[in-house]
Every structure is written in structure tokens, then in C-alpha cells.
Image (cartoon, rainbow, N blue to C red; front, side, top):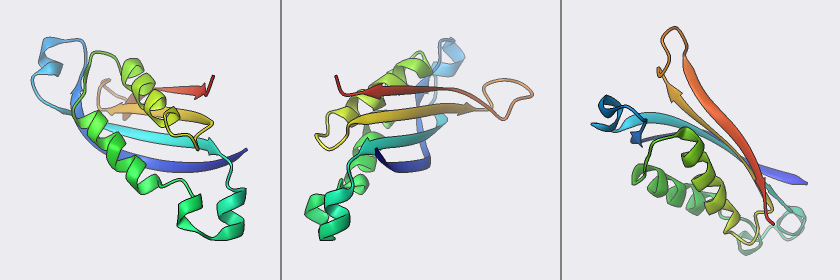
Length: 117
């Protein structure tokens, strides 16, 4: 399967279980790998045949920046589900990181992989 990736997408959102985490938006870093079939756009070189990952990125940012999840797991699930709504996406691997969430660690996060059912 072919893949499109979006690396190190930075956003800010309300995320966390503790009261102090929910007062202000925090940084999150998102990495997404989308499984899709790139043969047709590869042959035709037509934008209409391709997955518009610029538009998808804008919509994902909007989803993230307006979310208020307690867990990074829930945010990752929401992003994956949104990606799978696109008919050209067969599968999505989503990694969500919270930089500085753990003392002595650059980042902590989760990575999930979901496929169209």
C-alpha cells in the first residue's frame, strides 16, 4: 500500500486530565501516515485524482485546535477517524505527542493505527 505522510504538525489544544493542564492550550505534535492508492494520480499527474493533503491538514488542525480531550489517546482516535472519513484513505497511523509533559523526557505520546472497516 502507498503512503502519504504529514510530519511534525504542530498545534495547540486543551489536553490533559489535571486542572492545571486544562487552563490553557498546550503544544502537541502530530505525525500522520495515510495508506492510500497513489497509482492513478501517479499515472495521470492530475490533482483531481490525488488526495488533497493540504486541505486535510487544515481540517485536522481545526479539529485539534478546537478539541478539549483529557487523553492523548482520545485525540489520536479522533484524528484517525477523521482521516478515514476521506474515501481515498484506507488506513491511518497517528502519533500524538505532548512535549515536556514528563520531567526529564522531551516528549510523551501515543501511536495508533486504524483501517477502514
